[in-house]
Image (cartoon, rainbow, N blue to C red):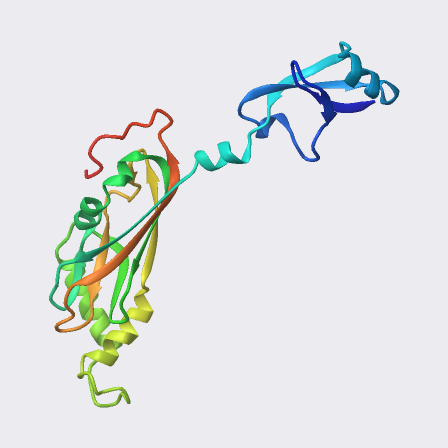
Length: 218
């Protein structure tokens, strides 16, 4: 017996390798079984083969439509040296978040003397203690070779490498899926770093009805 796809009003064709009903989305095909010797006859006369199950084949175009990408570059205002909770700034700059049922957002800071991290968003002491700890790990001084941009520059590079330049955060129902006490931090490692550029890249599945969720800021 040969497993075939029988399309109503069409012809019989071999079942693609590895295709199973659980992977299918749009109903348009019927899985049938026809004896090997009768496949040609079925193709010619449209015989009535035994039906096993009905399912559909998702085209490449349909698969691509189920996924969406958004990319945006924006600047964060100049901050004094230290660690700063910027969750509100991020959300305000990404209104497209509200369109996504689920997905991921990647945040990338385009600088070598600033960094991004996630940490507690409640106690005002946490950002201060975090900055103090980084200063102890990479203190200023003349023991560095790279001193031509100021004593705060090389320690800033060290801190940036330790903390990282990017974050990836899940999206759920139009909102960043952060924990109750989690906030996004910009860590400014220079005394006068200026505005900082961030690239946000969103990948995910928009709402099926094309609408947006309510305000994504909680």
